[in-house]
Image (cartoon, rainbow, N blue to C red; front, side, top):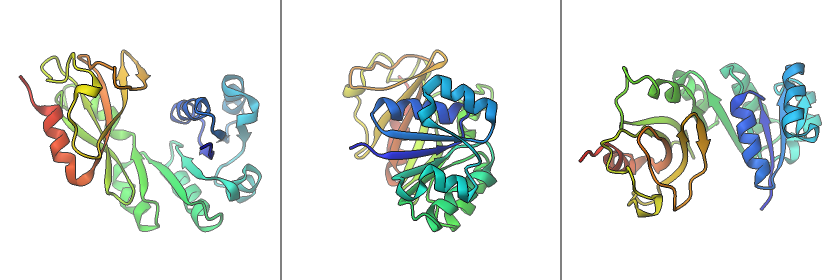
Length: 223
């Protein structure tokens, strides 16, 4: 079913999300307050998907159609902007689902206190790429969904990972868990049952919080 999805913030995160959602035939609008970036985005995905303006401005939100939006996603580089945007989406426009990017994980509790339960932290992704600090095959939480009952996690696969050479369909995952994305060779890839794991893959998965330890065992076990 096609949905109307508003993305606030036209940086790398916002544009990649927009491309994927458009490819799935959703109605997508990206709000970007930098005029040059807005023009650049228009050339990439079409002017009909771009609105120049501040996503925290109620008048811009009205013009964007927050009132009829199925989902509002705020992924700017400023936690304060993401907080304000999502709070207005919920309280003023009664958007049923809002998702916020949290750049500083310590701010996640603030988002939850005002009722924004779907948050994703990009900081964990950066940390996980620093080999000196984080070991391969470690399962790292990078966000929470649905009031904290679901975790978004990632793992950088080493050559010793038991997943190497196996297809996604052949992996036994904890109930309710899904492999959703692989970051390989500098680019992101969608996952299907035939996708085979390779050394160096950054695997992103969703898992019920109660089963996170089970998934950790799947990723961390070595031969």
